[in-house]
Amino acid sequence: MDLTARARPARPGGARPRNARASSLYRLVASVALGSLLLAVVGAVTGPHWDPPPLEEGIEVATPDTAIGSARQLPSHEVRVVDVSVPLDGASVGARLSLPLDLDEPAPAVLFVHGAGTGRSTQAFRRQAQALAEAGVVAMVPDKRLDTYTTRHRDYVAMAADYGRSLELLRDRPEVDPDRVVVYAESEGGWIAPVMAAEDRDLAGLVLVSSPVVPPRQQAAFAVDSYLRNTGVPHAVFRAIPRAVGMTMPGGGFEYADFDVTRWQQRVTAPVLVVYGTADASMPVVQGALQVRADAARAGNDAVTIRYYEGADHGIRVGGRPTPEFLRDLAGWVRGLPGTGDAAPRVAGAEPTQTYLAGPVPQPRWLRDGTALLVLVVGAPALMLLGAVAVGVARVARPAGGSRARRDPERLPRRFAPGIAWRLAALGGTTVATVGALVWYLLAVARLAMDYQRNAWVVQGGWVGVRVLGISAVLTAVLLARRAHDARDAGVPLAPGAVRRSAALAVLAGSAVLLVVLAYWGVYQLNI
Image (spheres, rainbow, N blue to C red):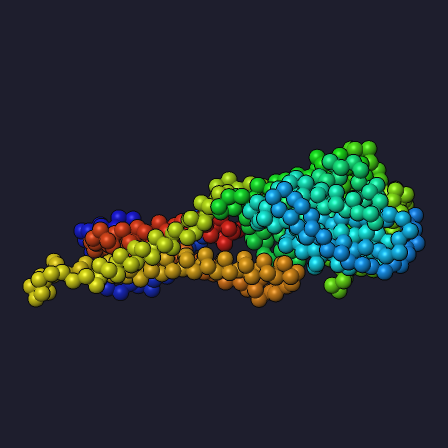
């Protein structure tokens, strides 16, 4: 677009005939459609698609009864709670011990490893620890070490070493039989506890509850896919999964996203109890159990017991409380070791469902750098705003010379060609508004997905609104181009002066960047 174009002969005036107006409308619609199609192609070629393969392998459940075959009858003990401190390298954490009273001999024990979050000993695993202690099992819940645990940086091997200090303290307790200590890990702890079990061959057992098994990046993509499918989002929104999960985060970090626990699981020789709830859509409940069993077999370990609890969520809860059957089975399995390690049935409970495989996430080819993407999304509106401010300053500036300046039209501030200024403003405004609407939509869908809820007005209606705004941005770009073409034919300067010319270029460049970003995130997707 030549922003300083001048003399060309003007077209003869007069009203256009009806067929000319119809032809003009047709060209406008065709131009908008072509522009949207080009953006759809840009979106398709600048990033990966999302098409997870179906899970073809299933798991055979022997019986709906989850009871452990050779588990002992559980006693009933009074429980005493003791708070202790665990020294670590450069820090210390608190821990809570639940001790069964009136023990005749040192008892088996369970050390709890936290999932994601703060992990306070006074809040986490309270019902599990109480149930174990009542059944004659010492339970220890340490605080999670937080000075080395952030959203950006997590070292699961180092975390395993920290939990190892708690394990040493637990074994040294006079109430505990050091040869009968089990590690219980939930969710994110499933990337930590196998490291402990691989390095410590004296563990009596390993309990993996809602274990992700696959690397965090793959787990995140699987969970988001499952949530979005339940929420009922349009197909185009799924394109965001590999582009969001596959990119590097702004500011760096998140190296742990590709941590693979497989090589540690393949060294676990202790009996393993694998537990999932059938209402937990965030975990690969079938694939996870199969993977643990296959990895343990690599170490010559076939003592893997698998249990599925009907309607239980990620914490094996129904109605906010751990299911009684789970607490019973957990205590029975721990107390009965080593006999319960290979007791029948090996797989029991409700029938699990997993439709798609949790696998490698396609990597973006163009906008993989999250920092660069953030700079583009923030920098483009900032550039447009700077241009608008510059034009505003130029408009309020008055040339020196008083009445003489007013009589000299050459010294008056020059303006954009008629119709150019508001079209530039509309283009910048609609592109920024579409980006804002897209961000709002993705956050709203994320909230619904995490709560596992549906809302057609938000999910379907919101997406229609985002796409309508996106088409409006293309429409304003076409209208601007047509008006610029007419002004050139009339010999009217489009953006006279360095300030207006720079401002116009800023709006055009910023809008172009935002349109590409919108295309990348699927706003113009045509399933190509």
